[in-house]
Image (cartoon, rainbow, N blue to C red; front, side, top):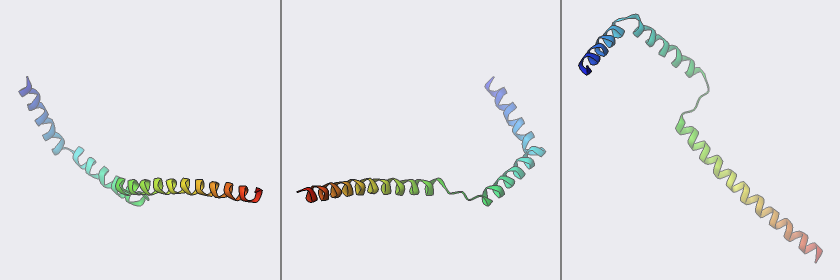
Length: 81
């Protein structure tokens, strides 16, 4: 049974390779590649780098906000004393 399925699979692959389906696939890939090249896309790696940088910037901003709040509280206490 497995041999039969393998044989059918091989024959179908051969038919697809020799048919216009292969040309359509090639043309579709070329069309998609051309379309994607016109878009302003970034790679997954570039996206991950930017996401990491953004996370660090957010952490620094949170730390600075905490520090400013502490300094403001200190200034209020000094004025009140």
